[in-house]
Image 1 (cartoon, rainbow, N blue to C red):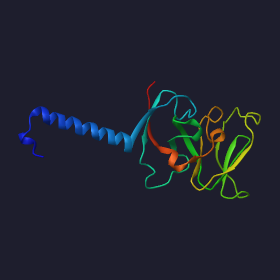
Image 2 (cartoon, rainbow, N blue to C red; image 1 turned 180 degrees about the vertical axis):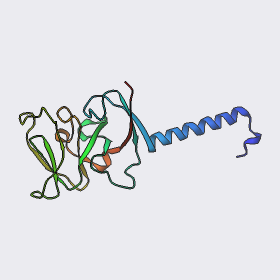
Image 3 (cartoon, rainbow, N blue to C red; image 1 turned 45 degrees about the vertical axis):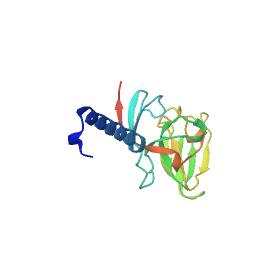
Image 4 (cartoon, rainbow, N blue to C red; image 1 turned 90 degrees about the horizontal axis):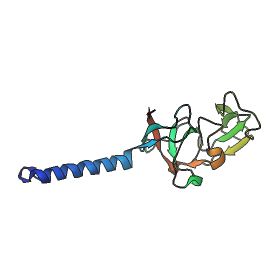
Length: 173
């Protein structure tokens, strides 16, 4: 289209339309942002932080252990959650006395990948746990392990329920 013969008002309308469409496409397919509500990811992310999410992060490679992701748990309907990946597809997850382990086989060598709490954990606050992930499931925990509602209660998350990877956060407080 030759814009030389179009009025200034029409040119402005074309530009505004192009900007709105581009913004929508970027927000819907590439980059999203959220306000963090709650402290399940504290101290990494706290209530009131603003995060940016790369929605295309896993289009060409699989999620990695320790990535922070935005997900839709089956049990949470339309609510989104922000959690850290600790278990990868096919692994066994063990939580024993507040320490989180993974293993490739049921009786295989366990590797420590985290703790539910570094100081105040007692064995009465959480029962020991073990679970084998299916080929497309990920096990997610909040960094604030004693107060987080995560895969321990809500179950693992399928790959298609991961909306994207947190790439940046801003403390708005």
